[in-house]
Amino acid sequence: MGYCYGWGGSGTSILGGFWWIMPLLFWGLIITGIILLFRVVKKRNSGNALNVLKEEYALGRMSREEFLTRKKDLQ
Image (cartoon, rainbow, N blue to C red; front, side, top):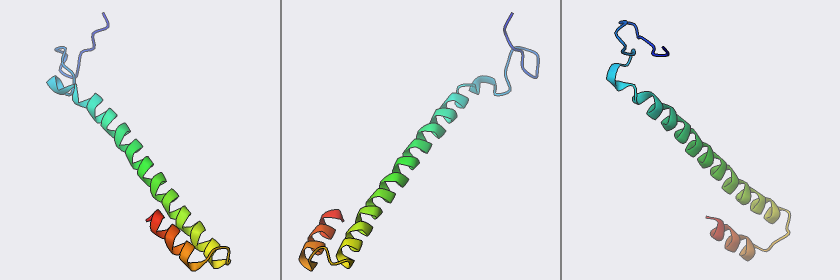
């Protein structure tokens, strides 16, 4: 009881002996999604800092030397 017979009715699943591939694919997709999400967030945050720096310089709140120094630090 509780044993699922596959399409062939002989106790094998659709994947046969390769049933272990499905959990690997599942976790591989989850891990890949998390990594891609972190890359997007990191890229977005680094771009925002440079944009804020440019805006501060454009408004005259810092000198050219200070702007170039901070820009070099960010890159």
